[in-house]
Image (tube, rainbow, N blue to C red; front, side):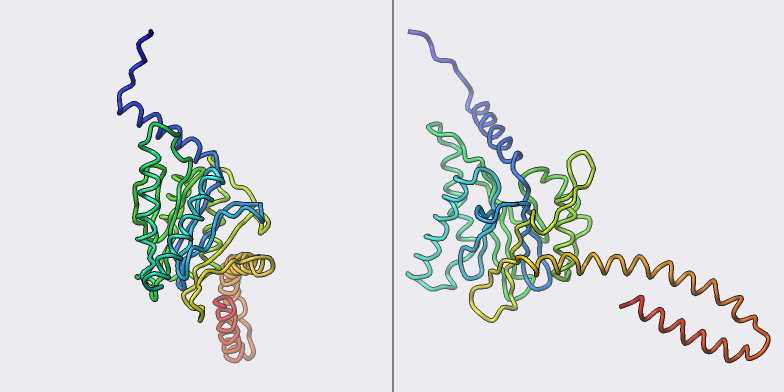
Length: 284
């Protein structure tokens, strides 16, 4: 009888972690970030049937990357946990922190078990609060650890590059259109530094909107509404770019115009009024 090959526990865990990370990196990325009225989820996902972002409970949503069958099983388990806890106790007893702890135990048990392969998934659990400072975002890697995130987070694909891009540009108080544009810009950057064009057909977008009057704060942004939000911010950026050279042209024209012989005072006053109206239009 041959002697079994020995592998140290440290090497075995390192091999399992590397296996899971490679599987997760093959998937398309998901971005989650806070904006003034809630939490925004943006995933690169052309499928309209296989969702990466889903509702779990009243104020809680779930996003995942990796193997669909594995994170779908986790999503279903999370919905059952939330429904049972809300029915047994109270709806307010269902929290993102409690759900993240359940997911962490499940992922940690699977990762440390030698009897089965680790799950090739990375999860995000988010809960919207009554105010921006009450929002909660938790990231759960394949090994079951929990990372408390603030502001923005990216998982899957080239998550490190996307996270760095978001950290430099995300700010508090962003509107939904601004946050969506930032998320799309971050997802459109590939690993070699180039940029791709992502349209509404390539994206899965949802929000936890604290301003919704009903208990359920989750809402998908689809079709015309998504296209309008993307076009709205793109048009605003173009208007800003046009406004800057326009202001410079107005200043350079003041000199020759003010040198007219007759009615110089009236011309100057009229130009001043015109300059104010131009600057107001640029601000809009």
